[in-house]
Amino acid sequence: MPWYLDSAYKRNKDAPYTFYIPSKEVIGNLNIGDMVKLIFEIETRTDGYAGEKMWVEITHRDMENFKGILTNDPFNLSELKRGQEVSFRTEHICDTEYNDPYSSKWDYYFDTKIIVSKDVLERDEFNFMLRDEPRDEQDSGWSVLSGYEDDEFLNNHENLQYISIGVILNIDDSILTFIEDLPLCAYERNDNGAFYKINDYDWESYLSE
Image 1 (cartoon, rainbow, N blue to C red):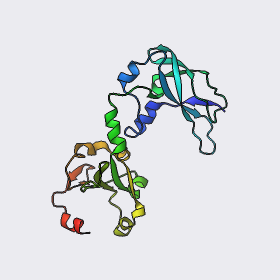
Image 2 (cartoon, one colour):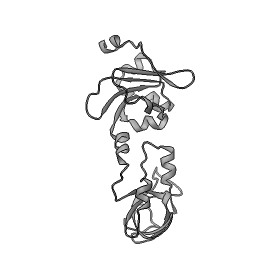
Image 3 (cartoon, rainbow, N blue to C red):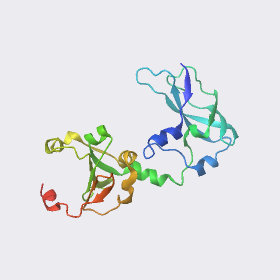
């Protein structure tokens, strides 16, 4: 079964707030004997299987170019074996064994939760955000809507999901400019595509629901 190494950098570019890659500082300190994780993909995907993330021990480094020994037993990649030599580049590294000094931002992207409507995820678009008081340490208090939902849709709890804030940031990270605004606050996207604060939002009606 032919395989190739997928680019962790490309995956991060496509989903910068949900696909972690090690910082330049961590990558710069990698040396012989260190362990890195690579993404082994299958050229012809079958049954939804898209490869495996496996650990490789570095045996050689020349700037951005590496060689290493596979330390995992692949599940489905029959052409790969534990102990096999693998050539790779910096762009292929999706994790290391070291603590990353910049990992705190990833903790925020992964662990901070928001309520989002399924319509947002289907459209890959959101136009309204409201922040209530958080319910627990992980809850940000934010609810995110596409703006196209009707009351019937929103009254069905199955149409709402509790997800990591990084998913929404992948769609539009301009909200980072006001994401720390205190509850109670609401924002809407204007005709130019920018969010503005709704200063006269009807909180009395919202809180009485």
